[in-house]
Length: 408
Image 1 (cartoon, rainbow, N blue to C red):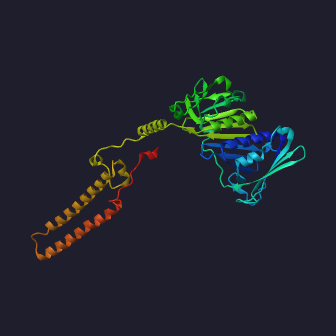
Image 2 (image 1 turned 90 degrees about the horizontal axis):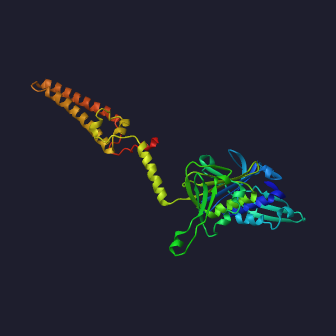
Image 3 (image 1 turned 180 degrees about the vertical axis):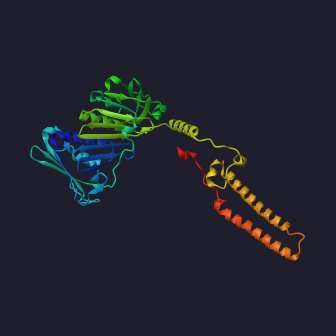
């Protein structure tokens, strides 16, 4: 892979690396014929960033698809590796006015597998004064890249803030604040720092900062229901700083406090940055939501009769599908026992009837009668044996309980 970044785009590339370094420890680089993607996931799996540059961002961009380390999937060939975020940020760090100092920045990736001397990401920064700064970073090949499960299409609520509205927003909150709460209403949104209850109990006086934003300062605002969610401050500040550095609006997509908070920064046909921050939920809120979901399931669940076996006298209980109308496995076993007792009684009645017809006759007739009785007995037994395979093969074991929730 070979990518050349012009001097006017080097500063934006640096902002991207700094943002990724504040979110995660490792950066996954994925090169495809039409784009170059940088993504990261923090160690606690509570924040994710995915920034993609198209070919128009680079002065020149090429991926050798014939290399041995090139992998293939449904979307085509690609080359993917993982690099330490701090090393990548340090290699591209340039002090002073980048546009006046740097002529271009070149990225070269050897298409090698595994980890070793051949697996290197080379970064060359060519200055206008005639010297070159070269960094060679070892990388590790990876088979999978992190992805966002939730999508912005599934979020009914959203807002879009221009760079002017974001100006100075991170500086309003204390650097010690670890969490921030966003409250959304029909009038607008409000950001509030969350105080630590442990510090409050220790006797320290902590103040809270609230920054309200009305709908007039937003480019767009769509709200389905009033929402209040809490998420990490560090990652949120990094995303706001990234949008401000590129002078691009920040888009947010959200639903309920139980789902991740999605953000996006887009430069049409050049760059797309997608972020996801996990929300913090109280245990009481989780219990209330679970209770409401169980109540909804109980209302939608079909009613099952709680009567005894006599309530199902019109059903053919020898058929397995009719077991759905029984309340418990014990009812099913009792019904099968009743069927067996009825068949055994019918067979015994046939035998006694044949035996009673033989009284008062001579020996020959008794032999014939005994023979007829044996035939009748054998016929009853045969009939019982013929009927037996229609029943479940294992009557003593309990049948798996049928759950109507499977139809939900």
